[in-house]
Amino acid sequence: MEDRGTEFMSVRNEENMNTKFKDPEFLTQFIEKYREMRNLWEVKHPAYYIKTIRKSTLEKLLAFVQTFIPEATFKFVENKIGILRNMYRREHNKIHISLRSGASADDVYVPRLWYYDKLRFLDD
Image 1: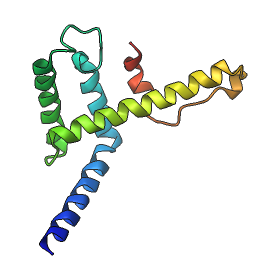
Image 2: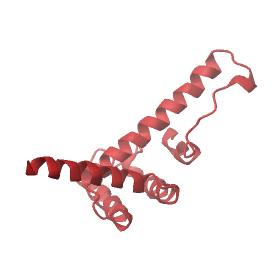
Image 3: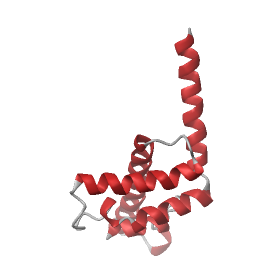
Image 4: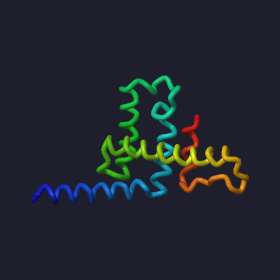
């Protein structure tokens, strides 16, 4: 019976962390910090494939996140980065598909993510 209460608190805690993460002011700062840490997203960066350096950089990003979301974990940050990259790529692909379909300029897909332009650095 006690496990159920713990599980409920865990789900509730996760929902709380997700809500805090989605705060536009925080998310804008997070994206900016992530952009500065090129070895986390730029495949051609010399340190991109060096796991110890990547982990160290992720720990710095986690420390930043914990100033706003104290209960955040390493896994939480990795998960959020993956979600942001996936959402960006999905929107980016929709734009390219609409361009290739011969749509007029007025009919080209317009991204719905408010932070889409902030993630354009991922194209580099």
